[in-house]
Image (cartoon, rainbow, N blue to C red; front, side, top):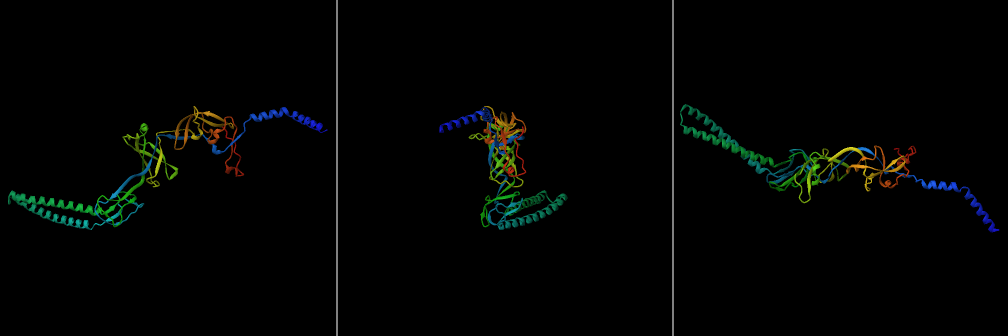
Length: 383
């Protein structure tokens, strides 16, 4: 009896399977042949746009002020007072320090007295010469007497000139005791303090003009033909990771380094707001080649094959397209696409590039858009 029931049950199950057999098999085959739709986030797509791209040799180095001066003592003596410290902003001619000038002031007063004496002697010699000139014209004196008076007058002129030179020197030394800024800028270093005894040539202050900075870098001599004065340079600076700066080549060293084969290049950088400071490390590129064209992120282009290719979304599916690339902008990390794609095309980037060609793809909405009830569901991009 148990055997009969099992057999009946087996027959019934076989009948059920036989009723839906061909249709179910066809459906399963269709589902197996249709690829599964892949969802990608907006961070894995990029749209082809028209932008300006540039390329050129790389350059790196440290920033320094375009104008920098070391203010040195020009007269000996103890420092009585310093009026500027490191970081102080000073104007042209601003007083930075005072050196004891008592000895120089005495020399100045003595020189000024010498000028007064020499001027009096010259005045007297001039009157004597005028008187003897009239006598000479009247024939009342000999030529020898007239020549003697004229010689005394010339000697008095020489003595006055010498006294005036001594006064000028004494005045300069007196002025040099007042240490002043040669131009407007910022005190970057102070090496003298009140009480120090300085001698001529001793460094006291360093003044920089922060309104213009310079970058000194090197480029390979093989790329020197593309480097010229006036070429723009785009670069990034340590301490400003989210900002890019631009300068221009102002000087190119006419001689290459025999050891490294590099040529030094000087780049001038405007710094009107004073945000940049000396000593920061900068790296960038000379924009020797520049043009506007269709661009895509460098991460969207697969350079591993015989020809560069991109994965493009079209009609909701992925297709592999071979392209021809042009300039690569290292600064913006974008590549110029010359052939193969059009403006507005949607490309896969990052991990999404591993999706096989022909796979249906749906672009999901950002997380913040999903959290908003009013935000409509993101549709697949139309191409």
